[in-house]
Image 1: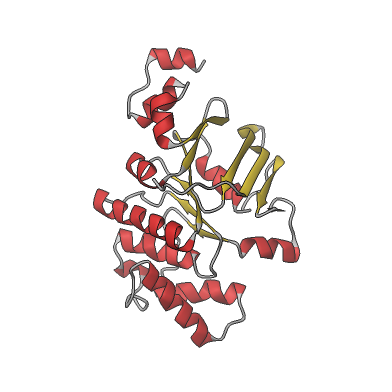
Image 2: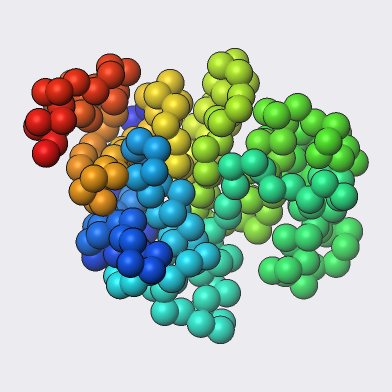
Length: 263
């Protein structure tokens, strides 16, 4: 966990309600992400973690609520305003989402060509620099199929960083990785956070990663369809008023007592 104190909000989620038809996934969700912190969204299966992230990056429109990215509402923004917001964020999807028919350099250039008017050689130079930052120097002509799982994750992070975003959204960055490789990804997140002051919003349920990188977390609950806990991982593990939260952080199975408490 990082030690720097962050106070200024860079993301605000206000009164967010998300539904698909008559099924409500999240109801009246409120929280803020502070500039420069590593912020983790967690919870059990089906609680709406990835759904929340998709709304935060503007892929879906909520039933109600606002999502302010550096003061601009991504829910209502259009045209140049929406483009300005999208330039401030980068996204690493769970499976990396690299284009299999393109090498890493081409994957990077695709993002740069969409958001900039730079000449090809300048885009190549930037792509190489970003790959070097994530430890993939010399791998620019490799195809995604030639990479290990950890290398694909790092390549996806490099692509998400292509246009120097203020915020990086990572969806399950440790999923499918062995413990050593997962720890390497955690170390990369901390490096980028500390050196480049990038704000991270990470969806994960991997406890070692949460304790390694998170400044703060919010825990979603499937039953209440909202946030049941906010704070540092250590505080929630040891002092949360919700027994189910403490059990999540201590890897304990749910008991009848937990179900009675959360009823």
